[in-house]
Image (cartoon, rainbow, N blue to C red; front, side, top):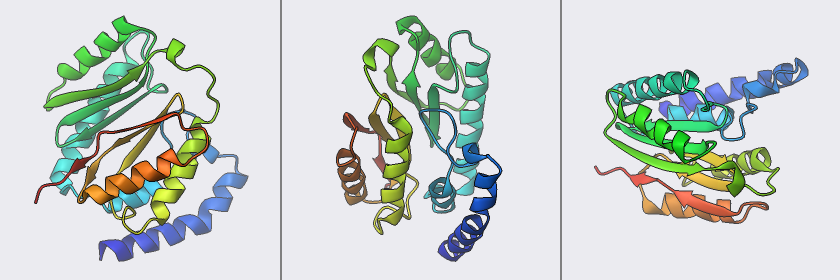
Length: 202
């Protein structure tokens, strides 16, 4: 039933997609942030999430609270940071000005109700070098994951930081992680691949 709903949802999105593009609203599907994009794959992955609705709602609340704190913290920006939460485990991914701001980010996450553990993939501007293909990498990779029959029914999240791919999310089989990493490593412009993926224990 969930898969049928997802197919119908995707069909409707595909029908109306040209209207949004013609209206100049490309950011509805690929936001200006270099880290994440909201597109058809995201909508599908949400419908296939392995977590129950209670866990999804709780994680969303944690994520929103942290993003609100980031918004109110000098030197930190949601445009340069991605926050994910799975069963209370929080993942902070992106770029901050320096080590001091990295510590600020970790502290504000620590002081957020509901957070169990914190994992980070944080880089500084000087680590970046020449990288102009974050968005291209993101779209290419999500397209590949969407088409893969082993991965398409999972809630894998993708982040791209300074041309490095970072995976977060819950999977049901280690083969899904292997497939995701393989696709990432075979995309032009990708420097490195890092995975925070966790196998859901029945």
